[in-house]
Length: 422
Image 1: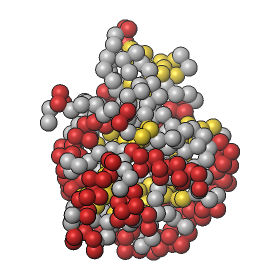
Image 2: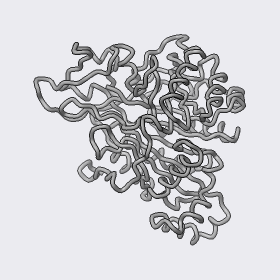
Image 3: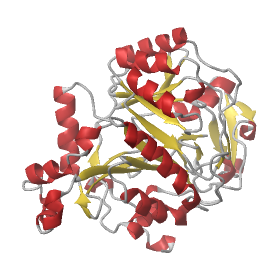
């Protein structure tokens, strides 16, 4: 489908998630700077034994407890499973009353470690796997060739039981056409794959008409963000991914979103929940349904919901029967279910598909970030977008962009695997 035929999404059609800086669904915790992978486009410094102490993590938790109400903690790195005290970290997250979610490449995961993580209180996994990675367990040139690895990890978690499982995949101009195949694969296993997230790739190499400054001093941003050919030259937008998902699933329809800090029509985090059994899709939950779930959870649990339990994700049938009648947008899905007698005796699941569109560098140099970013992290007692933390560490401030010779350019962005920068 040519770009000219792809219409931007209209945020007015969807539910703007009520998350804010101080009251959010998620907090991003980087427990180590050490990693066991080399990934194209990754800007995170890989430091051997660069593990945070439990005391440092405890201090960060105190900052979060004071400044930000959250439902879950994304335990990240580097590669968090390399931290020698990862079980204690999971237990710490639980003691604070949060859901621990392990953001991992899965290389270091074993059956024994999986069982111990579950015993420690882990809520679930988000595995990041894509063709930016140079892996020893999957030599893939395309995203389809990584499917066997993804399926192995999903089965590992599913067979252990009681844990949620999701996958992140960075998408560039060069891998955009592979998105439908991954959607078709994920939709075959709604019982195992609870969430699929597509993250749009960005790099400063897409912003050649800008100079970059920190505290008024010109800096070479390419020392931090190394150029890569993998990302191509085009900045993808959320609607590009939506169009590709609809090639595999024409019924795909978002329900909620987070917008940008500058452009009101940005859909930075685009969220959709599929209702399906293992045989077919009945439809997607509506914006009203997402509003109901978020409002109920905040009123009765005290936080905005970020990760649903496996039991809730198996409640697709109840979702349709009890809420479908009164929700015009979901009534069609209910009728599809009722008109399929075989579906009455099958398990019906809720399965999430999300799109993350990182920072957009506007023509005048302003940067539109993810408003109410879920991946906020702590550094030296302050909150920062985790995607730009390397700028804070290296320059002490976020870098600013200035058009060269006053010239206007197109937009440009950067994303480290799963997070945005510039």
